[in-house]
Length: 289
Image (cartoon, rainbow, N blue to C red; front, side):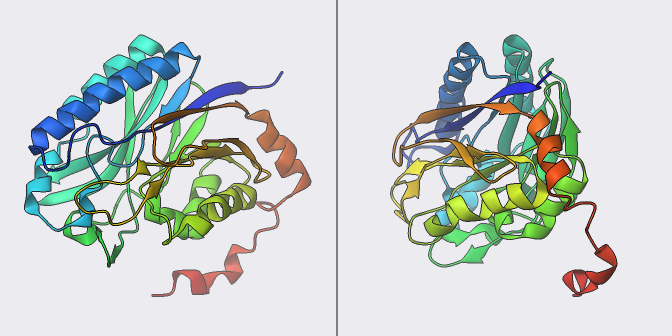
């Protein structure tokens, strides 16, 4: 009997100007996503992932300490709200947030919450970019230190990789070795910089590691920075690297759904025995400093 899981991705435009008070932006975006989560639940979603830093703009376009006001502990108040929503909708949630570990120690993280509302843990973005123009992430985030956890949820084994992480195949392999069946990559990436890679790298991760990938990109332009067009086009792909559901919206909100047959993983792995044929004793150069 097939294990069919209905997955959902949410890509969402900023609903409050980035020049508004930080607390107002955060509350407006949380309120917006409460409604969007209800909409995907009404359409039968069993697991849903939000976009990177979902309750704010992509503030890394500038270096300004005011954006530290967006931080909160994980678990914390937004995690608690999402636990309540997960329980209400009987849906697994992957919730990317700006985490405060200690005052002045901040991470780009994602909480994973099971369908009964249980907080399962978090992933902290491992690879932190810092490049012009407008991707000043080392000003805001410490590199993740929790490795590559895989979370056993009601619907299957879930891993998370965040934005810039997707350029590094090593962590994607670690998630596969950890048993991940679905890996979500919430992102904020712009046209011209990496759009040509958007539908290349993550299907390649899916093929190499034989799992499903849900890739979420925020849509549209964000003022006043205009560092580039966040081009949306969120999608799901399967363990063969085939895109099974793709948003056609570049600058609008969208809800993306896919009915994922997790039994395909076994079928594909029985054909392509990549994990069996690995030669880790020959890969020492990968971890050389």
